[in-house]
Length: 188
Image (cartoon, rainbow, N blue to C red; front, side):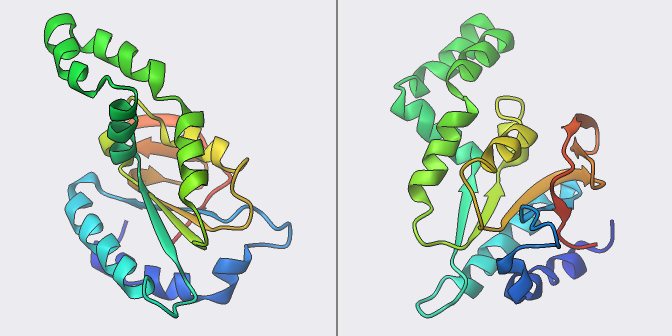
C-alpha cells in the first residue's frame, strides 16, 4: 500500500466521477468498492471520512453520502433488544465464548440490512465503516454478500482495516475472511 494521505486524497475525485454513480463495467456489475488501509492508520481514515462527509453533505450537492458504522449499529441493536447492559456482565461472569455466543444470536446480517434499507432515503453513496471494531460478531464479507440483495444502484465503499487483493479480504492483515470478488479496489 502507498502513502495513506495520497490514497485518501483520491477518494473525493473518484466519488465526483459520473461513472462512479452510474455503475461500473460493461456487465453493469455492482458498484461495491473496498478502500483498504493499514490498521495503524485507522484514526487518520476516520478523520478523513468526516472530511468526505462535509465535502458532499450540503444542500444542493449531487452526492448524498450516508455512513453506516457497523459497530455503532451493533450497539444500537443491543440496546433495542434490551441486552446492552447485560453484555458486560456476560463477559465478566461467563467469559468471551459466552459473550460471542450471546452477541451472534442477535447480530444477524438481516437485522443490519433492514436498518440500512430503512435509513437509505435519498442518499446515493454509502460508506460502511467500523469493520474492525465489530469483528468477530459481524463479518464484512457477510454484510457485502447480503447487501447486494437490497442495494440496487447505490455505490458502496467499505473502509477496510486490512488488505484486499480483489479476491480476498484479510482483516488487520492477519485474519483471512472468505473470498469476496465482487468488489473493486477503490484506489490503488
